[in-house]
Image (tube, rainbow, N blue to C red):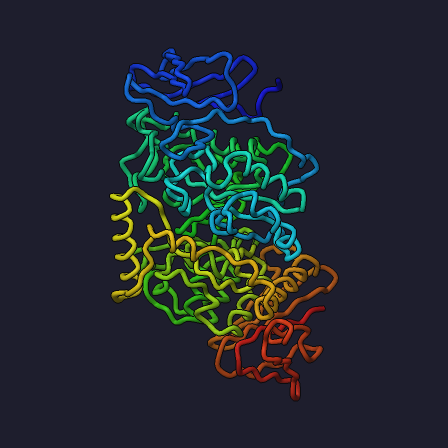
Amino acid sequence: MPPPPHPPSVGAHPHGRGVSFRYWAPERSSLTIVTEEGRRLSLTREGPFFTGLLSDAGPGLRYRLSVNGGAPIPDPLSRSQPQGIDGPSEVWNPWHPWTDAAWCGLPEQGQVFYEVHIGTATDAGTFDALIPRLPELKELGVTALELMPVATFPGTRNWGYDGVFPFAPQASYGGPDGLRRLVDAAHAVGLGVVLDVVFNHLGPEGNRLPELTAHTHARRTTPWGAALDFDGPAAPFMRSWVRDAVEHWIGGYHLDGLRLDATHAIHDQSEPHLLEELRERAQAAAGRRPVLLIAEDGLNREHLTRGTADGGYGLSMQWSDDFHHVAHRMVTGESRGYYRDFVGSAEELAHALRRGWVYEGAPSLHYGGPRGTDASEQPPHRFVFFLQNHDQIGNRPFGDRLHELVSPATFRALTALLLLAPQTPLLFMGQEWGATSPFGYFTEHSEQLGRAVRSGRRREAEHFAGQPLRGLPDPQDIETFERSRLRWEEASQPRHRALRELHRELLHLRHTHPALRGASPGAHRVRPLGPSSLELVREGAHGARVRVVLHLGGVLDHRAPEGGAPWLSTEAPRFGGEGFEPQPVDGVLRLEEPVALLWKT
């Protein structure tokens, strides 16, 4: 039997002689493996570790862990939890009949991400159920799935950020084998797969890690619970644990990258910083394939994606909330919460397009102090732009999508800007056809925790809305989850099909036109044309050029570029528009309704 890929430094490790176990538990007096068949293996102390070998065992073995002679618990380092957070752990099978040997991975440039919540993406809510949809996503112009967290969480419905078994794919989604089948199938049709992982905290229900050692969590806190300890007493173990997780997901599941949740809540004063170590470990696990590490960082910290030779961490990309917040305020007028930090002007939007984000050290009302750094030297593709994502929809009180808040013409115009900008675009599942299903916040916690979540959700929603709310969906109610399911049959209806066609045509242009296929600092120009209008110009080799005029309201008289009428209007009938195909009069275009116009050479 060949050695498994990337054997872990801790946890259960199957091999030709049986299953080895190794745990870091310096304060504990004894650890015992208890199998479902009644076998017991007392582990041997080796310094701060406990180790042992269970012969005549292998993948599929179900077991629990007894600490200091106590009642057996699930293994917090388990690679498989087939019966959920309270069931026995299972030794996973690291050997899989992969068929993707020819897959070359994802380069940094040229990506179009499609964020997916596995549980609501299909009626079945499984990895396997998504596989038949992969060819149409590839045809649309998507290059990679970005899966919301799949690490085992309480119950069967959750966003995934409450995970407590960071190595074990959710059983109700299809477990380890289902995830590997999805990744293999995606590679077969030419799509990459990036996974959202949470290394800043663990969920409040079912977290067994502190039973191995009392120092896994730091004294610092995050908005979602205690921070994990990466520079204190448990740092050697915790850093190794996270490095193992990165190797496990990249090597064991052939993933093409990881989206690191809330990196601003990963506290580490060590050298090198944990994030830099994770980048190195991810690339080692990927071998020759390129691998992406994408930060979600609320502080606009440029050094996360700056090269290590220049003192940065060398991550691939960052999410840019600023682009979303400016665009959202511009078209909805909403001004509470983090939207109060933005005025929603064309100049502000142009600034985000020029430099990746808006805040570069200016005081932020929402954050209560200076926020951000200068990122103007960063290549544009290192910023992930979006009009919608799970947070920006699901954290709204009723989970409503942007296209339900603005006119169809406005949504089409913003879509053109997103898909033709030099930054890396991300779509949220169903966005391309204007899905009518909301995306709510849903959980399946125990009764006591569920009451606390329900109450906290109401407080947050009413604070953001600035008023009491009636009919607020209950996160614990299964109907909140069921209403969030995509209805793929909508995509074939005329108005939905027309919006999808706009996405498909713009993405095809993005992938094929020489002015749009790559971008470096200074290769694009943006200027406001009025309070709600701007012009984006992108240039490539041999004089290739794409010019986009975005107009979101009011009246604009704009001198047409040489060549006269635009090549594409987002109000063309084939995109569901009103047939507005402007013709210049004496070289001037008069724009009175929301539209995006495109000229190309």
